Image (cartoon, rainbow, N blue to C red):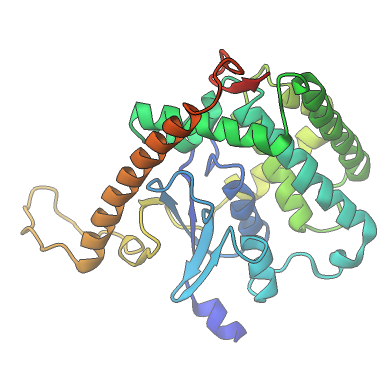
Length: 323
């Protein structure tokens, strides 16, 4: 089984790079880092067709696919299947478990709040909607702002209190992680999925969030966390790469995008080839996606029009607030 896994080629499908990161998505970035920390060879492709899909990121090899929205996510699925496991005995350490819980809940929620509610939305638009027509991207952004506020239970009356709670938890997490890390390279002797999530959070917060970000300013108070991020980024993400040159990719099957071009002539015209069934299917799905997004926007607008708009205000950051 292990020999077949070593021979197999794995491809990570993520959202496109931005902010100087290999992928600008705060969910995709930890998966990329996890594979890097494990020195696991993989191809990196990008999917821009379904910007709000919960399945992204995912990793595939032949008929094997591990989706983000299944079985605890890609990292957990790879561990369960014995493909990439950095945790080992760490899973039985109470301190490690509590630290990981803080990173994957408190810090992840703080990033979500910053992206959709606590900022002007520039970073979120660049990550998810920059390739969509402006109107669709704008409507989907406003819809997601509404969803996030609903998830956190934010209303006009409790908005300040909720924000204070989110940032308070993040600051507590930073303090605990900074104390545990000290001057070590990793949080617990060697790299684990805890480092995967923390490193992803540190790099995303520093490079993707605006300089005025409350979360970013709180992180900057802990110099050892900043040095930790810079050191591991230099050693594992810049010093040399075991992943292939990234390619943009729009379909669940990446068979046609993994093969590099063998063309050696720039002037010789190639005969026009007939589109494969897979390419035809992709084009149909791409058109279907745009159509369904447009329908979703229209439904969203029509549903919102049924609310009492005397109780709904549109803030300057394009979000919703409630009386």
